[in-house]
Length: 99
Image (cartoon, rainbow, N blue to C red; front, top):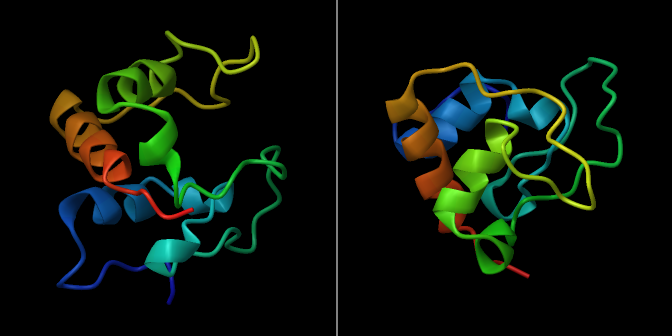
């Protein structure tokens, strides 16, 4: 699967792709592979297939706005889209519970 959204993609998945989150993160459970031909500082960024097991939606929103940390580190890039897109994105991420 490429980085373009498909008509049947959930809105959160489309936002993930549109914001090029896959340049650092994979979501193998959703057919999203890391990369896109760009070099990235996030080479060690995790696969997000199970992120919904570890973190609730509200926490993810704060993390993407650089208001939360993981191991004393903030997310590399602050989410710059509208609040509605952030809510849709993190709502989708919260459903990802594959181990």
